[in-house]
Length: 192
Length: 192
View 1 (cartoon, rainbow over the protein chains, first blue to last red):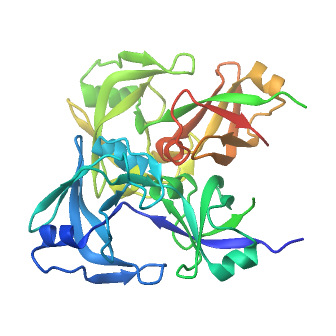
View 2 (cartoon, chains in turn brown, purple; view 1 turned 90 degrees about the vertical axis):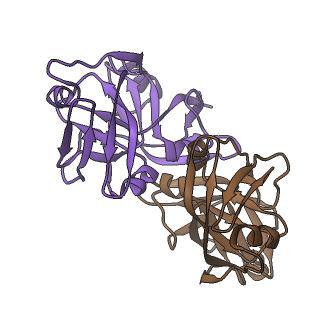
């Protein structure tokens, strides 16, 4: 019998990644994101700063920004959030924003309307190269992961992302976490 | 090879069931629910009437009432909805409301604060007795159901409910539907 392939689960709430240009429009010239708390991936952090996100149908106040600044602004929402905003974003890997809807982002010093960048994040697992080797998993591989319990679910098409910059962590959104009755800190098992 | 056990999927948005007493408090003496559209289960309907539901943290306007009137008032929300309301209801079968949180319900003619009745509905499949016989499934059996696609998911612990008053339909909530990228009219397959 092979060893169980256990991974910690992180449930991501809606959040925003911003370019430095947009940070300065939203928070003022020279503004920088400040760290509220570190995330599971090395160098990534939840910022103290938040913005409002306004869609054609609804809006969310105080959406957390994740740092550091990125090359493209991106808004990650659950499908539940997307309906509330009045948007129909596709399920995408982070960074793959061609053809996705835009949205209006409002900060204390200004606002930005992006033409694209709203996605429902595709569920994925970050593997450090050494974890991937141990588990026998390749970058981009699609996995099945069971998250057990009263609302036990097997998630299919979980994308493996392998890098020596990553720490082992499975990322699902709030719809997925809630459908599985799972919270950050729970455990998943790769079953296929 | 046995025949595939396919079931239609219905995604239930947040909704309310009311007693006749509460209908009259909320909508006025002698008020009755009026049918907006029939549901999949014989005799059940979405009403034209809606109410507001107010929790300690947030509220929802225009929550659909499902008829006919019931023996106990019950509010069914997704876990996402529950967080927005500021409640922590358990996952329960419909009708099993002992020990669940209450909530304030507001209609055009009055309001009611229920002491219990807020649940996250446990996913389930209604089987007509003849479907259950054909599929070899017993009442209360816990099933595994795969809902495929880009966000394919296997739901475990899906409760079988068998009656000659039921029509074949799987009921999941919006978190579950969104986690699976599924909408009403999609198909699930019982795989275990």
